[in-house]
Each structure stands twice: as C-alpha cells, then as structure tokens.
Length: 513
Image 1 (cartoon, helix red, strand yellow):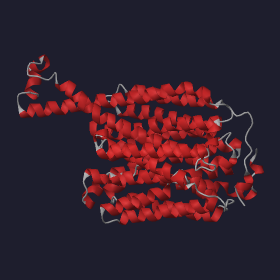
Image 2 (image 1 turned 90 degrees about the horizontal axis):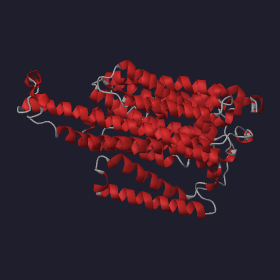
Image 3 (image 1 turned 180 degrees about the horizontal axis):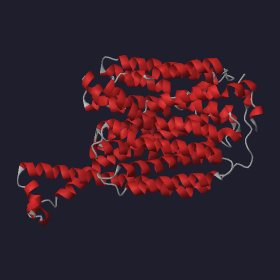
Image 4 (image 1 turned 120 degrees about the vertical axis):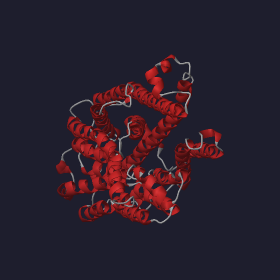
C-alpha cells in the first residue's frame, strides 16, 4: 500500500502529526527517570525520609501501569484525538502541581495523577503512527517512535541533574509545560478525530481485577527490596492480592462474553511472541541502565551530569541503528535483525562482566554504544512484526497490552537487579571479610601494613571500604551476567515468529474523518 491510499489530509499533515505525537511520547518518557536524580533535593526540601521519598517514584509507576491497558477502550469510546489531548493536558497540569507542591503527600498525590494522565500517551501515539503510515513506511515511523521512547531514560538523568543543580528540583516537572503546549497545539491544528463507538462498554470486572493485580505487583516489586521481601507482612499481602486478582482476571477473560482483554488477540502468533520479547527488552535495557547510574556514581565517583554524559552514547547507538533498521525493514528478514540485536546486547553484557571501577571512559562509551545499537536492532523490527498481522480493530487494544508488557518488564528487571545487588553485596562482603585477619600473608607486607593495619581503627575503616568496593563490583558483574544469559536464552524463540505472507490492509476509514 502506498501513501496515496491514505486520506489526503493525513498525507499533507503527516509530518506535523508525527512531530506532535513524538513530543508527547518524549515528555512522558523523560518523566520515567528525570525525577530520580532530584529525589535527594526533594527529600531535604519536603522533610521526608528515604522510604517516604521513594513513593514519588512508586506512585507514578503504579498509576501508569494501571491506566495503560484501558487506553484502547477509551480511544474507541471517546475518540483517539480527544483522549490524547486530554492525556497531554492532564499530564502538564499534574506536572505543574508537582512543581508547586509544598509537602511530600502533595507530590505523591500529584505524581499519581501525572502517571494516570500519561499512561495513554505512548500507546495512543503509537496507534496514530501505525495508522497514518503505510505498511511499507512503518519501519521508519517505528524508528522515530522507538527513539522517542528510549531516549527519555537516557536523557532524563542528564537533564534532571542539570536542572536540579543549576535551578531547582521543581523544574524537572515544569519542563513538561512547553513540550506539552507545543504537542497540544499541534494536535488541535493538524489532527482530525477518529471514529467513535458510543456503544463501547468497559468490562469493569476485568479492568478492576487487572488493575488491582498490576497495582499490587508494582508495589510488591518497588517495596520488596526495602522491606526484605516475604519477611514483611505488607509484601506478603501485596503478593496474595496480586495472585488472587490475576486469577480472577484470567477466569473472567476466558469465560465472559465480552471481556476487558479479548483473548483472541493472542491467537496472532507474532503479537503473542512479540509481547514476550518486548518484556525481555524492558528487562535488559532499563535494568542495565538502572545498574549503570549507581555504578558510575557510587563505585567510580562520577558526578551526576558526568555520568549522564558518559551514558549518552548508548542513546546515540540506539537512535543511529533505529533509523538504519527502519530502512532495512521489508528488505531483510525481521528475525535476522532481531538476532543481531540480541547478539549485540549479549556481547555488551559479556564485556561488562569484566569491568572494574578502574574501567576507562572509552570502554564505557564504546560498550554502551554497542548495547544501544542492540536495542536499535530490537525495538523497531519487534514493534513492526508485532502489529504486522494484527487486525486493525485490535490495534488500539494491542498497543496498550504491548506497552504494558514493556513497562512490567522494566519494573521486574529493575526490581530484580536492585534486589540482587543489595543481597549479593552483603554475601560477597561476608565471604571476602572472612579472609581478612592479622595473619593474612598479604597484610604482612610492611608497605601495605603501614597503610592498612587491621589492628587499628583507621586501618579497619580503609579495609572495610576496599571490601565494600570489591563486594559491590562482584555483585554488579553477577547482574550483568544474568542479563547476558537472558539475551542468549531468548534467541531460539525467534523461530516462533512468522514472516507475514500478505501485508495487512489497514482500516483507513477509521483513521481520519
């Protein structure tokens, strides 16, 4: 299908529509990490402890996870343009409230509202791009979309660190105002409303059960490491609620006449397999990014801004390869592109298993670029093949589920690697400290004993610092190894993907009126 087959108004305004939805996605993607570096400043300004301040992140993640699945229904019921405008306006308004908040409970509440409003920005924007580009052009469109989604977590710490250090932590929220204003105005000017289904109804039982399951899962993952997992009564309750709600959701989905999630969507093999792969992408990419930030700042003593700059080439690798892969889609078997992406990711993780705190900046930059390139080879073809054979009337629901899988993968990955770091540092510290005694031959060396004497308090303090550093290094290496293994294990599953025999016909009558 060629661009001429699309609505003429769509073709004429396609560039501006693309710019507006990309800005909306970047605004939402930035907020996944931009507030992280501002937490210490917010904690001091708002008089909160370390446990309380983490709710600034948790409330946003929980709200976004709950409101992502119904984005397809809301777009069908009220119109995609109206819902996207409402999401942008709500996100900007909540951002202003977050920046103006005078207490920690206010920030947590407004972050929850921000997460609710921003949840539909990514799936609705993706649906717009899938509809306004032909099948042949979707590779390039998904490259732009992928860059906007993945560049946020990379740029967030850099921009957030600079704004916090030079202006105020409140500006990590106020920065959304000009971006949102441009996106909002552009959508009003250039986008026509999609067809609505006034008879569409929400399956409240299915939605409620899934929302409770997702919310409980997010709380379980986000607070588990802080509360020592199942030794905490709160964590046990959250796990039980998650399992019970998810059981109710599954039973209802397969027995109800019209369920919240149409189970037939998973009969599309490419979509079902892609859901698993995008989960793995969420785990490996954002989990490794969550590891690298404290690795650089804690073990290597990099300032926040410097750490962000060193991580920047990772995003450059992603962007460069996304555009390259966008041109290769349709010319090269998508499964080969995905295999290259998994291979590059696994190689980058393998190289990182040999890192120490003395690793050079060039090594960090080059390996980060390779890992980013791997993501570029994964995100675009995976998104393209996921929706290649999915019927047009299921696309709105599909984008919501697809992005939900990526978000849950990110949460699971970050929680798992963070918990493993905390646990393994303690184990490694105990094992290393067991061999540190006054009778250790290495400590008998006069030059070493002069600096590090285990019989003095000063020497013990230095020894403890060195042991902590070594224990942390080994813990990070173990996490990198785990992510490498996940990338390798996923490779054989590529055989489950099928190359579409016939390009699907898009329902362009539903795109623009």
